[in-house]
Length: 159
Image (cartoon, rainbow, N blue to C red; front, side, top):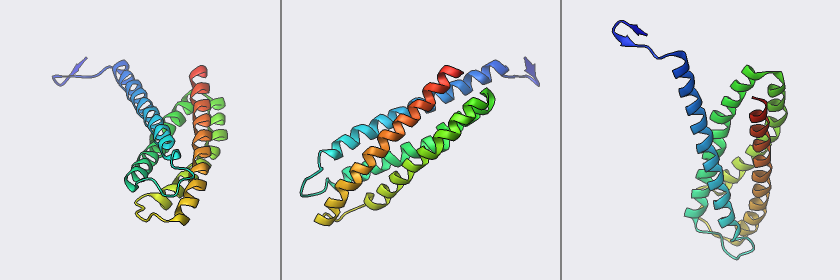
């Protein structure tokens, strides 16, 4: 259809672009999540050691971790919430059930980031806390992945 000499995009074309954007955003987010897990495993190799990993390694991990969590909260979950509004009350209920538990894991991520990002000091006290905090963070990441996968899988099968 043309209007004023310009071709207008059809509704179907706009919807296809929205789906592509959603798929790309979710794919990028899942790739970032995989990167977080790999980087976490590398840091876990330093548990029970006498010194902390290099600050660049910790800072890089914190950067990717915060990017992943932020993308989830501010992009992916928002898309899921929008889809839930369109696709029915049972989807909204699922999101409302899972989101508080996902938010609890966010608190642990933010605490870890605040404590260790941009850290330069390498002392024994920080090392003992690092082991404990890394363990707590690992549990939070595992719980978050389970909750996110539950949300994604359920919505995929329902819609």
